[in-house]
Length: 286
Image 1 (spheres, rainbow, N blue to C red):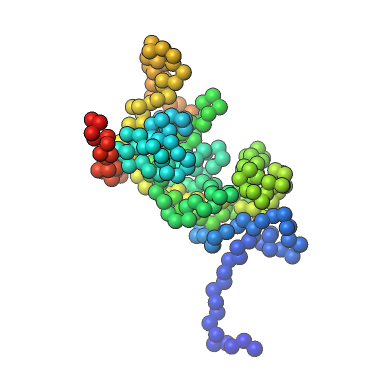
Image 2 (spheres, rainbow, N blue to C red; image 1 turned 90 degrees about the horizontal axis):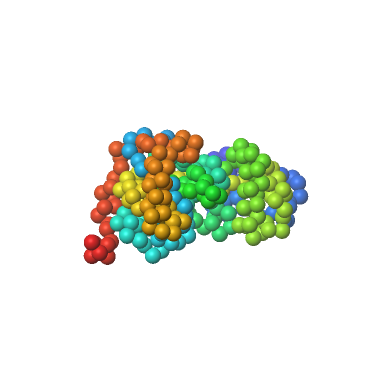
């Protein structure tokens, strides 16, 4: 008989979905990928920040590497002068095509689906990143726009309803991405992986990205450098003509190209937090 005076322990959420914890025989081919570290807090959707000034310009990954320095998702290597001047050390690139919850204009918050394979080790602790969102495509290349500084933190995987909001094409594409990134799932075909998402055996990983501030100085420096305007120009005259043409195009981004981005920015811009961290090497060059 239970002791009526014994305090009740709080209920704990299971680390697997109800579908995976059903009375059916377990699927030995499917690893438990939900909450591999601990039960994460739920995603918080933050209200957008109203902005009044911005520099909307899109860049290819190669152009941004030329301007800021090379590197993968995390630390910028071989810092270029612009990155050193504005203290750009950590960058997050995210395509809006594979991440429907990714911010599409400066001031917005949202989430990205990072956490497959070894990426599950990212953002275990909150990090500050400069976010570049892939909002447009140019000749098959994803073009990235500067969104601002963001707090990035891992959150509880998204519910099945978020998976069902995706089109069939998007689901198959992400299932293929899951197969490529997850070693234990490479023996499964893409349609089977998709069915596991639909049944709640696999979940979309989630990293919350909360808007902090927009570095207008960095955005202007990137726009003024505009290395994309000099691509594929073999002579000085061609480069000059191409620069004028592309500046006219870049300077007036249409609504369809910018996917709803506006030329609005916030008074809360804080250039001081980065202006005081200029590289000594850069100062000597001047």
